[in-house]
Length: 436
Ligand code: HEM
Image (cartoon, helix red, strand yellow):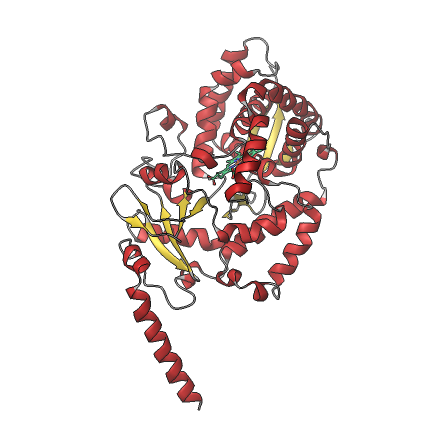
């Protein structure tokens, strides 16, 4: 009996494989390099069993397939991973293909609710229309004042330290700044930097990444039986639907830029020289919009920091219709297009000597879609202007006040590629008040 069941199972799998190869979608997808997917789990085994290492595995596959767009099947979902900037432009500027992928939203929604970032269709359009005016560039000068004001409180704390974990101070600083700028409420998280909200925010990113790479996530009854589900419910209560998107991403980008500045003293020297040129004798003046616009080298440093440590590691669109990419190949409807930043930003065709930290590369002409940390098109990051001024103003204030250095052996960040790039052991820095 047992052997009969095994034989029937094997025959059914063979029939499934043959039928699968005949589908219209498969005929289109096989135009892309990729290994043949197994029934039920697809290419899931290639992602391994540790979701924190899955992005590294995808990166290795991208190299194996010749550093170009390639395909994977994860469970029953078809992905085309895209790293070609022309195709990135086509996808992000598409006027109607704006749907976020289910892999991401399944993890995000229980934690952050039906936010702008997780909504689709009419609901998304309506929320987007409602929130856009709060981010208008005319409101920026006021937002810069708010960032500057919160820097004062940050400095009261930093003045007492000579070694810090940047995440521990920058996350509450940015949460306070975002709440004050956008909602007009003073949360004073800087007065309680060990608040459980921050640990919950970190765990949330781990859980979302785990859900993203779990091929059984699309079987809801099964999900409710798992440890992942229970942990998600627990963290959701701590976060209480408070949007983590904006302050967390900006805090990560800011902390990583400070890390790069600390790691490369010659870069730190040039950032400081630019600040001196802009502020002359007025060493501790808080920057305004005009002065921030003059900080071109600092801007290049932030871009290069995001390139080497992509804040958001991938964004995606779930296709409603077939979509033709630049070389003529067509990605079929129902496929998820994953823009894989880690691959794009390490592609020597786009960035020469990609392993080198070199902010000057941004002073040479490059493809408009070579670096798109805030995405682009109708569904781009609604907070990108605010993020830019927050990043520049805070670093400008910090770098004129403190000399930054790495904390030394044994403290090097252990970066992992979750939905965001994060360091498992924080960002340990030495800070010293500058003497002028
Ligand atoms: C360095 C900081 C930041 C980075 C790197 C970043 C990056 C991104 C990216 C890549 C997306 C996805 C866009 C897409 O799918 O095409 C996004 C969406 C979004 N971001 Fe940001 N972001 C940052 C800061 C902020 C801030 C400060 C806010 C608000 C306070 C914000 C609010 C949002 C929202 C609401 C969305 C969803 C937009 C939509 O779906 O229509 N972000 N962001």
